[in-house]
Length: 137
Image 1 (spheres, helix red, strand yellow):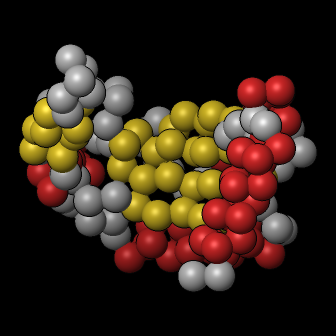
Image 2 (tube, rainbow, N blue to C red; image 1 turned 180 degrees about the vertical axis):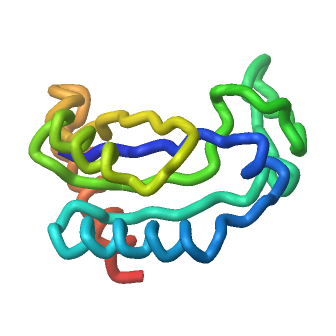
């Protein structure tokens, strides 16, 4: 099972306050442990929303708004993409993350099987082809 671990933004992350050397080292050790265990597939921190934009869709016309955005629970400061055998295992890994403060959210990523018959053989082949192409880049 794959999970997206969403690191929620904080006042500090939105203000562009960079993590300390100690936190970066601890995070590096944690990431290395997950990589060696075959759990971590990707993980990155994100710049504050002052450097971002949102695209909203409605009325047939996308509209763009540029950051900063008000601090709320929907702002993201970073993420991991991990693969574990269960949600409980994902939770166990994330309980070991070297955070002293903050919040994360863990969400399961859809797999092809989750879409049932709506994912036709042609669409499945396209998905597999695109994943293979991305993997070669």
